[in-house]
Image (tube, rainbow, N blue to C red; front, side, top):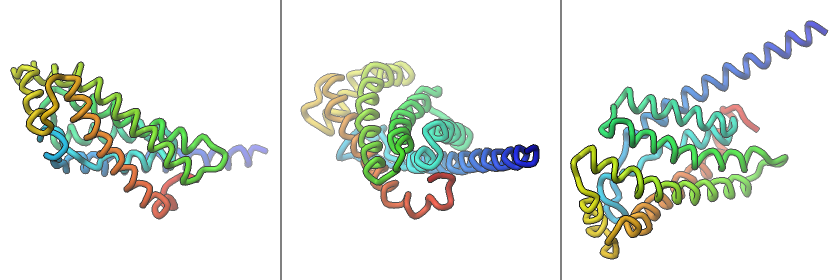
Length: 211
């Protein structure tokens, strides 16, 4: 009996150690990918940058569950801050953490918390995460981030609206900016992230702790 308990304890300890290692590794990769960003001038002003840092985070959420996804997201932000720093006094990084969690937590929950994990559950989870994150990003950007950036850089909110108008002529206020700039940008970003994960997860899940 005691030997069985000891054996089970050793297995649990190895599993915990492996999970921590994988979270750290995936978070580090995500942090590096966060530094490799580029603009999408046909969708948004240049201060909105596309990166693929949520790919490793979503992989962690699928393989180990939504809590692991949140921890990987946290490691990502810390790695980014250490390697590149911040120009927003941490405001943008906090928002990135919130958006990332809004994406990977529902996706991981829907995929993991089914008796039979399938591509259908993965797709549904990623779709829910994409829509939820895009909506959350609209409100946070319009009512918190853009005004905060304006104060940090001594820019009126109207300056951001003008940048949005240069991309989409129908942008005349913050609500228009949110609907015509922020929403399409995030839908594109997280849909592309979901597509990449959909294509690679089956190939690499054997090296991750998961189903």
